[in-house]
Image (tube, rainbow, N blue to C red; front, top):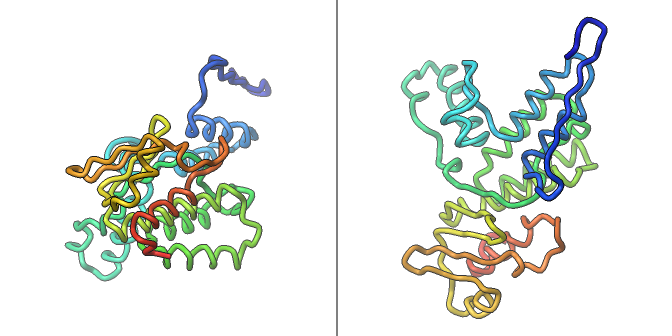
Length: 246
């Protein structure tokens, strides 16, 4: 415990045989990177990036806003500000388009590193733009804008745009879920052509036509352990859709 000139310390311990989740690793990295006095705000902003925003005006950091994440938060905030400026109080009560109803949960670090975009307000602005990108073209335009201003894009930022592409593609093709759980990719609702089912079945995949739900082991993508799946999954979804969205 810190007292006056005595520095405080914290030790985090976990079993060697238990793998940390990506979110836990990101939180520990944030604490490790911000150890100097007065770093509380930076840690809080990094936590916001990791798990999504909590209550906008109150002290509560859980509930509906945390559940839907940063996407809906950014869209609702933008809509509320616009409605207030235009003097339309009723417009602020409506919900934005349902991009936030799409769940994309694929392994890989997806954030804007502080060393890449040092200014907190600028990072939040970029997150808002990316979260609001409803089409593949929107994502491409935002990425090119960022590259023009900050050419040396790190892997985590590239992954963030790759994830945004998957989400935009899902939005354009009316998919609600593109997620990896237990070593399997789950996509729904999705139509799988018969000619695509042979390699899917060989890889141990299953398709429930009545639910339009596809479950496919991630080994199907033949990527190295630790590699992000965003690009491979997007290419796969394009194949299922007959190459649409390229």
